[in-house]
Amino acid sequence: MFEFDAGRTGWLRGAVSCREDMLHADDSRLFTLLVREKTPVLLISGGDGFYLSQALAPEGADGDMDLSGKGWNGYTTADLSGAEVVVAGPGGSPGPGDAALLRRFALEGGRVVVFIAPGMEELAGGLSSLGVSARQRAGGEGFLELERPGGDTPLLSIFNSADLDGISRLRFFRTAVVTGLPRGAASLSFSDGTPFVWTERAGSGEVVFAAVSPVPESGDLVLSPWFLPLVQQMALSPLSVSPGREGALIGSSVVVPLAGDGDCAVMLPGEAGYADPLRTGPGMLAVPAGDR
Image 1 (tube, rainbow, N blue to C red):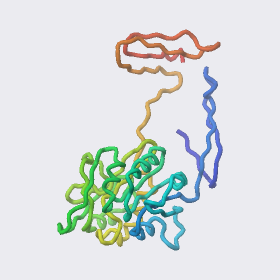
Image 2 (cartoon, rainbow, N blue to C red):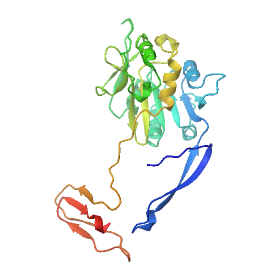
Image 3 (cartoon, rainbow, N blue to C red):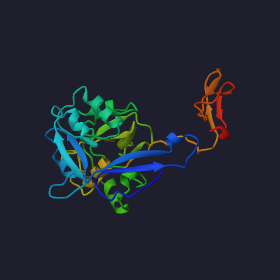
Image 4 (spheres, rainbow, N blue to C red):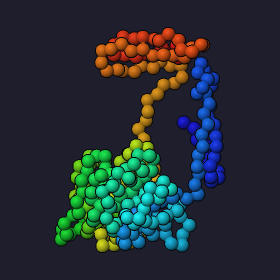
């Protein structure tokens, strides 16, 4: 891993190289990096997206998002290709193919934020890789509060102890009831134990779910001082870490467990093309360090 400071916006070009070894072809690699001044965000919603749009890009403020809005029947694949984050908000009716489109957007490295408003339950289920299902909580059941969060998750990293106390006192009258999520997977949960906000990895990207509609009728959150920072955290903050990939240092042995009883062989580059294959016994492929 290496780090560098991107001191300007636009396309940056660079190169990374390692110490020369027997295989010269991979000693140097070029890369490009697009540094944006603002993150392009696409909000897809119906007529109830006002409060959510104000949280994403407050009017009169110079924020971190370049926000555009479309309806469920009005956005195109071109809109998706120009965005890094897609927020699925309240109002309107997602079509049968919208979950697949947004899922592919996430798999290719984007982030999708889904507020499970009425009518969004099927979309949320189609975007979840964990097989969760959602329904709207029946009316007349009083209100829910949130469990007092611990603040040890990336989503809540910007909030201090007083903020977390205030968030835990928010009342919610209309929420989605989510089932099928593994215990402990939610970043925030309601007082009855049902999940409120959670994140799922999807290929190179991720999907963030919130079991509430972002409108004042749903409860205290939208008109509270914590709505804007929470929404912006959901849209922009790194919320999960890609699972690490196994590797080996150059010059060290590589041992790969194999299934089955057949023999295997590995071809290594030599001075003139490929050398004779190294063969091993059934079930294990070992490349000695001296032959790499």
